[in-house]
Amino acid sequence: MKYKVIIIDDEPWTREVIKELGQWDKFEMKVVGEASDGLSGLELINQLKPDIILTDVKMPGLNGLELLNELKEKEYNARTVVISGHDDFEFVHKALQLNVNDYLLKPVKPEELNSQLDKCAAQLKEEWHTNSSSLYDAAGFMSVDWINQYTLIKKSLIEQLHIHNEKVLRDNFVNLQNTIIENESNEPATKLLMNIYYDLMHVLEMFIVESGYQVGEVIKDQNVSFVFKQKVDLYEMIDFIQTIYLGVIDSIYTLKKMKNKVDIGKIKEYADGNYTKNITLDRVADTFFISKEYLSKLFKQYTNQSFSSYVTQKRMEKAYELISKFDLPIKEASLMTGYKDQAHFYKMFKKHYGVTPGEIKNKRL
Image (cartoon, rainbow, N blue to C red; front, side, top):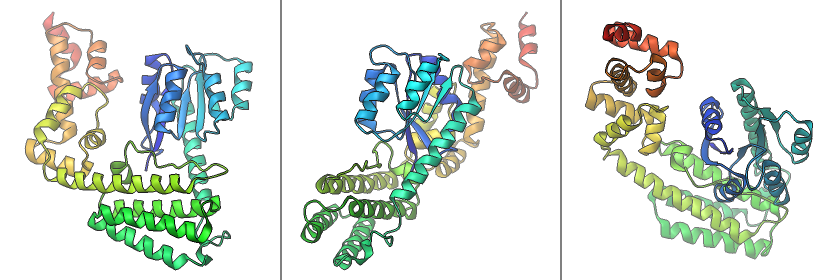
């Protein structure tokens, strides 16, 4: 399961730089949304429920500090990193008072950004482990009188996941809700509900892995981080978990169905339309809801070349055209074909054509 990240900044290029610099896969993160001002950012936060928020300070409408204050008042529990072009102690002081993880200055340095992402990931993991402490802990959940009833319900839930029986799965959740009410009343202790929640989410994650998929591959847009405040509504929590379970059943059914009906032509079309961007096998696999291993094997089978070789070929052909036909500067040709590192572009071009971009340009003259 990947942590959800959103970026809020009124400068489009800054958002692009942050997306490029962040080592998202390394820290099990995914940028799920962007906003160009505080108001849009707040709406995005309410909609996507991100785990990590990267926000500028000075923005039109609702500025970064006002946004952070709104989140603090709502007791929204997310890691927050402020990014700004202003080295101002007053900004730093106010931001830290609003529970910000850190304050980074523009231009953002990759090592500083990734250091903060690493810290955020560590804090989120620690928080998860703290909240999801064993069901055998001091809360005494395993010693409640109705633990056998709960165990039977959980066993049935696992069975329904494997046979994709949505009707019986829904009945299980109704049974679970009624069992809790009968034994603990309508307002059971938050700690008890947290134990049940994390136990059932662990069951779901194990089912996904056993089915041959990664959690992030199956659960994409649905937020799976249920926010526990001082008081948790039993009905809301049961409904939330049930929705996740039903969504996973549908997703795995769709994935298995598509696995046997992958249109390699559409994948090539997608690559042809996006090869100048930071396109990777992982991203294409996510787009087409298949595993990268399966995509790699299938692509090689139908095209007689690896996916990366295909993308490189498309980039080289385009670069050659830009230099030889349109006399575009080599640096511009490099950037327009997805290479920000010009030295790497030279190396790839020479390897592909046996001559340097400069030699092609000189021949044209």
